[in-house]
Length: 273
Ligand code: NAD
Image (cartoon, rainbow, N blue to C red; front, side, top):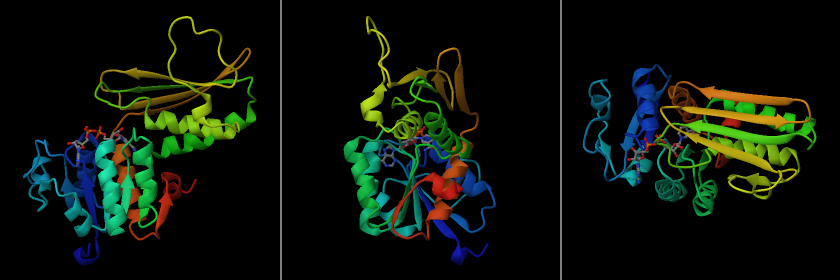
């Protein structure tokens, strides 16, 4: 690999579950022309001041974990963000100012934070995806297709399960599946979603899209979309069994995005579906 021409990737949230996996991918694999350019984590991070390669057992990488996101945007060709909604908001502003290619994997963004990411895409190439796996992106297309084929006599219910440390609910992937189903039925998830059921709630509202949530153990991410009709149910399920799946997707997305024109992209653009 010609170091002078390799793509410098900066990781935002470098010491987190996903950040570490992404660093392992870049440091340990033979991505043609990919190089770790910066590692940024939160101000309370255990990893600050330490060499990320050494922390992960790869030996010195020359990249020290710091809180300086602005410098990371200056130094790198593309940034990958798996942090928190609050941090993502600040990072989106840096993408806007620097014009640097920016991959957003953070989920649980509120309206303000979403608006920040959308604004960044007016000045920078921005790829946002709640799920970087190939399988889930194929599932999104399948759900839209099935929701269209089966009329609204088939009730749509979405179930998701994640590990006990996950802080947002429902998962960004469950919401994306809900958006895909709602759009295919000519409505919006905001109008159709029922995300909690308890007590004397009455019969199911026709056309609603239910989302239920499991939290526990070390589940990396399961999603099922059920179409429940009279006398039959069709279930589409995806199960992630390796967090490296998302990390490989994120690195692939970064390498794809770094030289793209300003604008908004999703994982489906990378995969070509
Ligand atoms: P995590 O809590 O393990 O990691 C988050 C990291 O961000 C932590 O190390 C934290 O110190 C760091 N951080 C906090 N504030 C920061 C700041 N201001 N600047 C830089 N770093 C900061 O969480 P995780 O499991 O790695 O997940 C992170 C996010 O990614 C979540 O929103 C999760 O839902 C999402 N996620 C997305 C996908 C996908 O494919 N898109 C897959 C898995 C997880």
